[in-house]
Length: 576
Image (tube, rainbow, N blue to C red):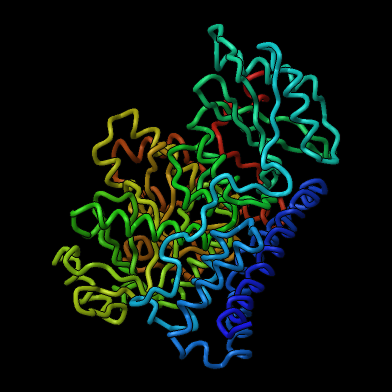
C-alpha cells in the first residue's frame, strides 16, 4: 500500500468508529424509552453531540502519529482524496456523504487554513447516495385493501418493536380512524398504488417515540407522524396522528433536541423526511437526526451556491442593535450571521468565553421548541464586494480581531448562523389586535416552557425573542441565559419609610442572581394595550411564587410534557 492509501485508510477507520458509536447510542434510545429513563435520555443526547469532535481529534492524532509529514506535504492530499473515494466504493459504503465530511474535518485540521485555496477536500459530494440501500430496507410498506385503514394502522403499531404493552390499542385505533375521517371528510378514491410507508426505526426524543410514515395515493404524498407516549405504568398510548404539514413541520423543528434514530443509511431517512417536510432543507434534516456536521456541510454548500446565483448585499440585520453581537443578514437568504464583538457595551459585563459557553449550553440542552438552534463556523470567507459598507465598517469598529481582509475576501474568524426570525418588538409594532394577543400569549408561553426546562433567559426584553413563520415565539439572545435553579426569585421589600420610597437607589441588598418578577411588566412591555394583554394572560409570571414553585418542580426531577404540535391535536383533548 502507498502512503496516500494508508492515510486514507486511517481516516476512514476513524469515521467508521465514529458512526459505529453514533449508531449504537441511537439504537439504545429504544431501551431508554422502554425503561422511561428520561435522565439517561438527556445524558445520551448531550454525550452524542460531542462524539464527532472527539473522533475527529482521535483521527488527527492517529494520522499525525503514524504519518508525521501528512500535514506538511500538501502534494499528497489530492491523491489521498482519490484513494479515499476508492475505499468508499470498494466497501459499498452506506454513509459516504458523512464519511466525506469526516475527511474534510480531518484534512482541515491537518492543513490548518490552507484548504481555502486547494482542491484537497470534498467541496461537493463525490459519491451519489441516490437509491443507496442497506442490508434492510429503510421503510416498510402496507397495502390496505379498503379505505378503512384500521388493520394497517394496527400492524404499524405492532411493528415498532417496542417491548411495552399498549394501554388500549383498540381505543387508539378508533381515535386514529376518526382523525383520518376528519382530515379527509369527503369520500376519497383509493388508487391502485395506494400504500402506507413507515420508516423502520422510530424517532426518539425526550419522552416520546415517533412513528414516521407517509401515504402514497396516485400522484399525492401525505405525511403521517404518530407520537407514542407512556403512562405512569409504562404502557403506551397514541397521543395523536399528525396528517398536516404544519404540525409535522413543528415536530421536525431545530428549536428542539435532536432525534435519536437508528439509521444504517442516513441518506435514505433524509430523503424520506424531505418528502413529508418539503419546506425543510436537507441541511436541517441531517441536523435533526443528530448528524450536525453533515448538516453544516450541506448548509455551507447551499450558501455558496446561493451566493453564486444572487447579487444582493449582506447588511446589518433589522432590529435593535445588540451589545454583544454584530448581526447581519443577506435579504435573499433566510438566515442571520452573528459575530461576537471584541468589546461589549455597558452594562454588559460578560466576555467572549462566557458567550461561547452559553451557546454551547444551548446546543446541548433540550431547547423545547423555544430556542433557536445555531450553526457554529470558523474562518468563513465572504466576498468583500457583497458586504454593505456600513456592515463592514461596523465589523471593523467593534469586532476587528474577528476579521481578516485577504484580497477580495473578508474572512470571519468565528460566527454563529441561525434561521432569520422577525424580532418580537418589530412584529408587535405593526401587528393588529388579534396578532398582538397571539404573539404576547406565545411570548409568555415561551418563558414558561423555558422555565420547565430549567432555563431562565436572563434578558426577557421583547427584542431578544423572535417570531417564526408559524407564529411561534422563540428566544435567541443567550449571553445572559442561566439555569432557573441558579436564580433567587424575590419580592421587592416594602419601603421602611418615606426616605426609602423616594430613594432612587434600592433600600435593600441585591445579589447578582436576584430576580424580581414583579418588575417584569414595567420593564418588558410598553405601557398601555400590550401590557394589559400580557397581564391578562400571564400575570403569574410577575409573581415570585410562580418561579419558586417552578424551581421546586425542577429540583424534584419533574420533566414536563411539552408537545411539538398543537395542544388541540392531542386525542385526550379532541376525544375526551
